[in-house]
Amino acid sequence: IRVGTFQYFAARQDREALQALADHVIARHYPEADGALRLLERVIAAQARLVARWMGLGFIHGVMNTDNTTLSGETIDYGPCAFMEVYHPDTVYSSIDRTGRYAYGRQPEILAWNLAQLATALLPLIAEDREAAIEAAQAAIHRYPEAFQAEWAAVFRAKLGLTTQEEGDTALALSLLERM
Figure (spheres, rainbow, N blue to C red):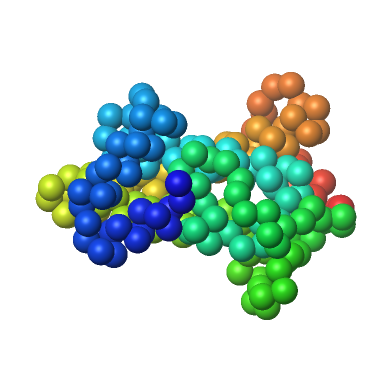
């Protein structure tokens, strides 16, 4: 089930279908989640982990739109995708991506946008009061960058053979990537 599936029902203002879809995803993937906000938080964590792992392998998802972002935190649609042979954050792998929207180094940013679209679609399920729903969803989305950075640092710490977490780990990994 994709973010785009939730967008479809949200655009139709079909709250019943949104609820059924959210209930299904919770039952199948996140049974510990007790509602739409917790579902959003679990998806943010799963996707942050996934994209950090992609980046640790040099993987570029050529068309990382909302229809190719799953709620389960799995990679789908292996159409235009590749692994970089030489490190360069602006590397793209899609003949239609002429602006670099889905470049290797932009994947965390694109994921943030996709997650924000999911949050928007889930608003009717997060709280009856729209302003309260927006506030709660924004708070969850604003925690994404920290979650992603933690996952990214863990991936690169492991790649570098660092067995403990130290303050300069991220700077060390970035320095290595710059040299590459």
